[in-house]
Length: 429
Image (cartoon, rainbow, N blue to C red; front, side):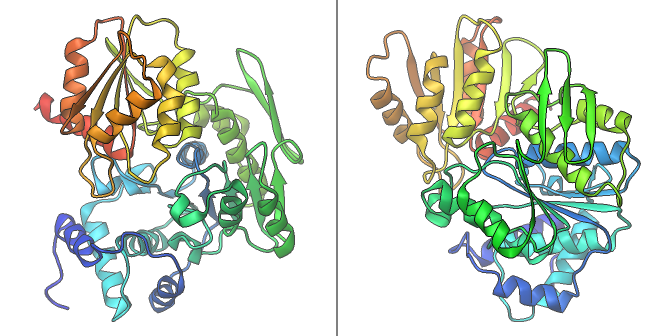
């Protein structure tokens, strides 16, 4: 055990190399066993957030509001763009390499001969780090599904499911009912179980009722109303009036904000938050890669939309931006996504496709993406579709062709957005 890595990059390389063949390994027995050995538990309220889309935004809003309220907040959020440390936030700041190395060492000693995937290992490490920090509240984002996700070895005080749509079909099933059941797996008996999807699957409702969770449904237990200037939240016993729109742009952000405010209403005795903290927290919230519009010209937008539901929201948001002569799309995707559905949703607002390979064995090739674009839009006319080796090259090509009134939408897999972010960063040095 003495020859454990000393640095974070060495640790990450080691954990990645151990489980090269199984990226995802469903089932919680191993994680639960290691959690018991670690004595992992939280002394403060825990909010857990699952959902097909919107979970990162909901987590970020909760963090922002609670920090404004003066609370010490831990946030576990995934995946990261440039630094692994982005996944573990303590009081709004990324955890240090030293803190993470110490947590990795702790998990390594506790696991003994139990094998853990990269995701399971890092999840336990970050949760351990947060359990040892002086925090008032911990927010945990679920990675995939809910029922069998490593985060779910913790019993949350409040669980949120933001939206239920088709994604990760190989693991979660191909219908909203199957996926709704998987996501409802984070609900707990007697605890608040919030669903902000306006049309929740019956399987999610049935599961909540069956286990005796305290189910909060959008439109029944909480809702919103608004005009161009401001909006109001109405919950079971709490109203929040004249709120500013969230700092995160986009059509679905009020649903995510409602989920956050419902969670705070459910915890109002433990974590009271005033009206001004809510207003400021919503305005100040930031989350990279969620309809993130960069300053400057041409307009550049980052969005990690990688399923049809998210792509439809992105297309709507782009449409609401007003006229641009041309829209360029830098797009890369994982193979197991509904790529046709994503391209169909975005095709009406894209003039020029810059399709890219991604550094992952799970990624679709740029040539495969180009073939799909051409089959969906057989009459391309003036439109173009070009292929590139990496996101940086695809973005550079779009920048070289775009006029200052045009726009470039970088979307798809996290790796697409991360690749462009990294390329832009290195070009500045």
